[in-house]
Amino acid sequence: MAGGHRRIRPFNTADSYPEQQLDNDLCQAVVAGDTVYLRGQVAQDLETGASLHVGDPAAQAGQVMANITTLLAEAGASVGHIVSCTVYLTDIRHREPVYRVLGQRLKGVYPVFTGVVVSALARPEWLVEVTAVAVKP
Image (tube, rainbow, N blue to C red; front, side, top):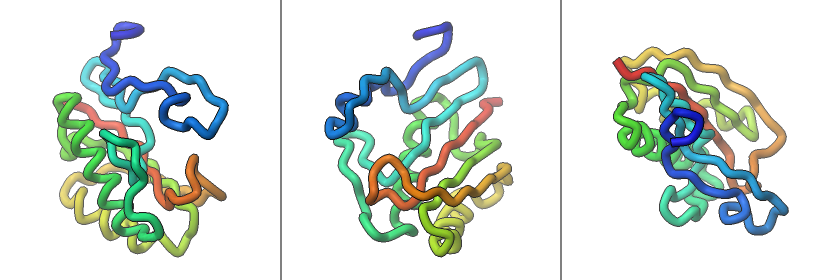
């Protein structure tokens, strides 16, 4: 509990990105009242930090949604509680395969979506990153 909010899976960037000169205290999710804010999720194993599904945007999107599902459960929420997502893609050609996977995993949820194409993410093998906000009833 920091700042009156529950922090889920706190970490320091010096451990997560040892190749970079960083020292930031972050966490995977913050629960503030009934709202859950998720850090941008990528195709990374939440336990080991290993990058997964290198070169496959659809498989990366599947891992992103698996991470989101896990973190929301730890926060006492579910995918059905998602109200907003921002999707970051490193290539516009990844939009269809990524959005197909996200659409399947969010069927019937109807969150608002914003899609952004960026030149890069924190690691070159990551093709998609998704932030999400959920509100527990």
